[in-house]
Length: 68
Image (cartoon, rainbow, N blue to C red):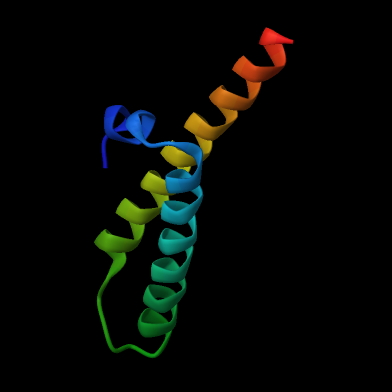
């Protein structure tokens, strides 16, 4: 997911997406540890998406603090 699309989401959608990514990452780690799946590429992609979401969330927090 691109940063532009992430910035278009509202805060609730961001939190929902973050929970969804955490859940997917958990399942991928579990599958990789059991040797069932070679999902390293998908795992890396999810990790980057999570970082983008956290970055956008932090930008919004800083913007709110600055507005006060």
